[in-house]
Image (tube, rainbow, N blue to C red; front, side, top):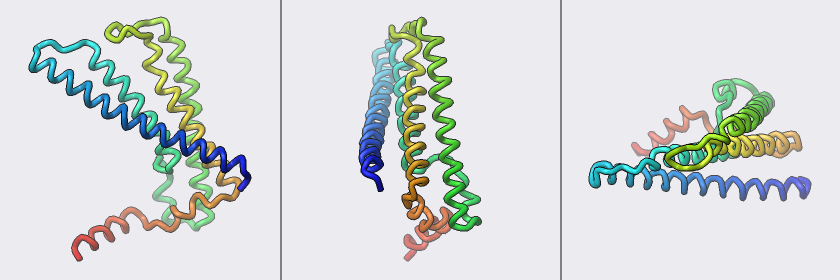
Length: 186
């Protein structure tokens, strides 16, 4: 594998790990904000106005960051049913098509996300006192990451890297579930 692909892969791996940690921190922060809102509403009888929109904005971040990591780790939607009936060579192309669709979807997220940011930038979210465009920045950021990670998978596959070999050795989900149940009974 060329050195540039290795360096790019390491950088994208670090970016993926950072995204996952940020998504986890966002989930924890959102949970804390919602807990604070419930405490204030039911104990203090005075619910802060910023908690709900703040929690929703954090949720947008961790959803899109987590979705991007899912693309890099091959947990995105794909042709799983067809993968069980086609020969090994066909599996590679079905996965390639799936990654191309994920790349196109990421590009669409960027394109339309930027348009939404542009259209709402001059508005203000009253409870947070920030631009309404910030509501759509997670969409753009998620689209950039999804596009990068899908493009990485496409380039590695075209370079002949065996990124699908481990997936081909895994049993179908139904078989894996039965094997797991058999292990529990034994």
